[in-house]
Length: 605
Image (tube, rainbow, N blue to C red; front, side, top):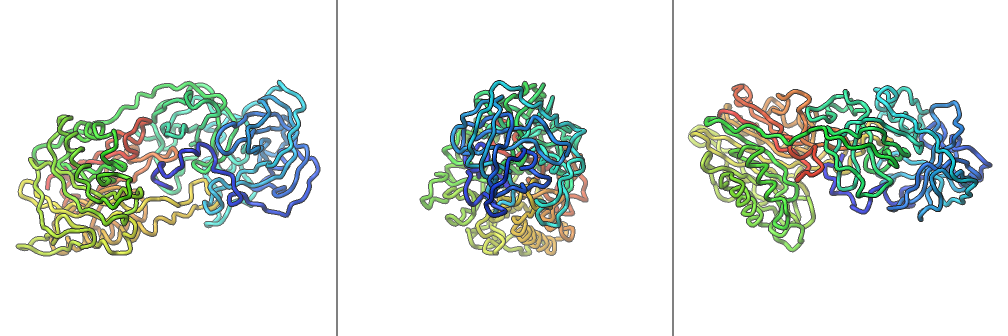
């Protein structure tokens, strides 16, 4: 799954642009006599009439979409058949503003197509549509077919049939057994949910996520925890609106959409099955508040990681980030910052220095009542570290010089690797700050790890700041391919192996060295990426010390999940004198200043 909603085009608030590349024609064009909606939908995900002309498909208009690139309307047959696998609703794609009204009885003639939001390469399921329609209004003011209630009882516990990585498109739908089959059997129909808890905050695209199963892996903040690849959380459903954007609620995780939310069930690129509401429930505040962690004690070293989401001098979030660092994080001794951009942000003119960005952040922290931090980093080579074009994101060490000192060893640059050496019997870095194996293929078009030596109360602590490759391009949980392919893992596995090898070099030189490896790992605590970081016992992900309902730093499609981690060497773990906190200040909130929650580790070296 992509870790950045900003990768989306802001203009696309509904399904992706309909194009030849995203429409699958499965059989040669032909002509079919008058058929019913459930005949067109069929008993699999693909219509038996795909590519054919159909005549006089009858139904009642249940919703119209008059905006965006996917204009059209939904119809539903008021006389359903007895087969629960066949949907009674379907979307009619008009490409221009539809000339029908909810409650119209219509007949539609046109071509049946299977539209794949995002294109066939996305792996998404397809949406059965009638395209190039001829529409006849038979009567108006008819009663709209009653909405099918989606409830905790109606949605199966099992998520999807397994296809060994193949497509589930041609498998018979079993809506009483699999959640994705159940939702597919309602595709295009008028559905409703009642008193649903919000598990994904309102985003800039006026959409949110709810669950009809509030007891399904609940998080401490009222969300739904994604704790394994087999716990996809079947109760989640995306909500969009057919109404005005201004009327869409600003919801935070833990809130409730009280009463009835109803409308046609769509399928789109950015969340799969989506209730496109023509009736929205009333937002009820769930009382979720931003967390504040405790301050470190005198003999505790506090180390944090915080993804500040493409921070550059043009942003208006410096004061808010400063408040978060100073108050919510209680001014940690060391903060690994991810996504610090260069001094002119996304302007692509060769600038790579981030002095202005960091000066502005440090001044904002002082203004918020925090310490005057110092900082260290290594400027990337222009355009070589991925992220927003021209932004040149990198990791930065922010540290409080009144509590810790940084051991400077000059010579680190974008392409020179720091190494491990022995000084007076103990491990040391040849370059501090320095980059870990920056020319290795693992870091191609990706952020290189930043390593540095710190001294706290006379003891050396090695800190390695990371920002692994994103999940962009992975198939979604609602993919037609089950289980979905996570292609982005390949690079993260290489990155994890490289960082693990570097930590092992430190520990081979000094067995009891204190090493903290942290950052936006872009992968879960149960993932192979994490297992590779932990290989041989060199590291351990300390987020696993938390109760399961607290293990999350990011919310994606209604799943609260771990992407940001702090991993520790055996000396820190064995000592038992550490405390971990995932400080929930962003991911659950509609007015977030970053999409990541910071993490804090406190320990006694």
